[in-house]
Length: 244
Length: 269
Image 1 (tube, rainbow over the protein chains, first blue to last red):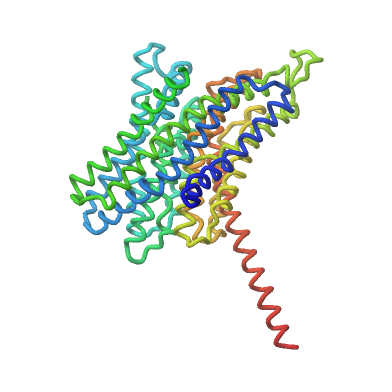
Image 2: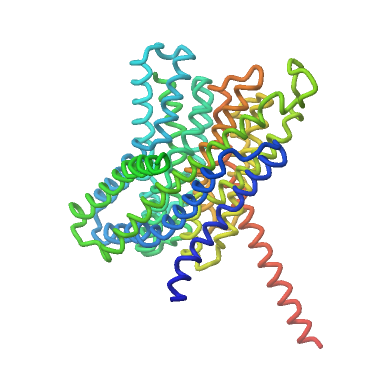
């Protein structure tokens, strides 16, 4: 009985601890700096309760579902030895999870507004939709490509910093040629592509691959996929801004 | 009733977000790998937990945190608050007047990063893989400090109106130089931590702060200057995570030197 309770209460307590800084910051600014009362405490309490339950379930499911499946697929691909299917899987994972990402859809629509304001495209609804649609597919393609490059890097054991440096040079060079209006959005697009479900899965995939290949260190070689996935969208979005 | 319908719609949209991932996993598993998934029942339960957990988490964010956080971002950037109620608003504001905004930016950046589920996931994995050499809380706090610095500096940039690429290029050069001095084990993880920090919790609040600032400061366009905070938030964690590794490495060496020093002393006496 005690053990059972322990399994439920302890993870929830951990979630409360994870969320505590937010509560403190919000309370401090609301009550002391802005000196405003808390609006609708009932709604707030309900929301906090949902946050704690949600985070607890997510972390539990991570260790039961997402991590094991990511790793078992990495092992299976390594054993199967088919490079083509491994890369096809990586590309699909990057492309498929990004193209429907709500944060990306929001950013793409805002970028279309910027482009219309800057006179890069017509101010019609159709032109904006086409622009946002093209941008989304460009970013999704770039994330798929990033995972392909990242997986090849793990297989070959290339040091990550050379590839990242090349990527940075790409970003900097593109910055000088891209239209000024698109730069802020392009830089932000790198951060929004990697969603909460994709990250654990991709991390498990990378670590699983690195540990199933002889001579690779899961720490040195296994991480880094997410870094590529947040770098290539910047380059591709600026490229998109230059072409359109 | 209102709450319940909100829970329903959010869970449904989370399910739609998760669906492509599930489809890709099971598609490749059964069509290409053609092997049963080990512990299928457990894995499926885990996936249900992840989806349900993320959905409820989003409900909580939308019910409790986002309305309040966005309201606070607007109030803190309001010229009346920035300036104090007594003086006129027409007067030019100096960047020093926005001190509370910088403090809020840093505090909310730190706090939301600690609660970011994707970062918790990567920290668990890194601690696992490194055999505990990388501490879960150490990594999360290092990343959170990086986000705090990044967002505070990003709001400063919006207030002063300096071009974003100067900061980003300088940051990149710093990152590249630091890469050559940081312990090799941390480098890939440090690069990753730039991307994982900005997800579910941080992005909406930070975007609200940026847009609030850019729309209240004269001469800033929300469309052009409102963006860029997320880029700052993904740059600085790389620097702080590498610094964290360098500091723990240096302290471990200091400690081993101290203990070996005391050993020789013990032998001498």
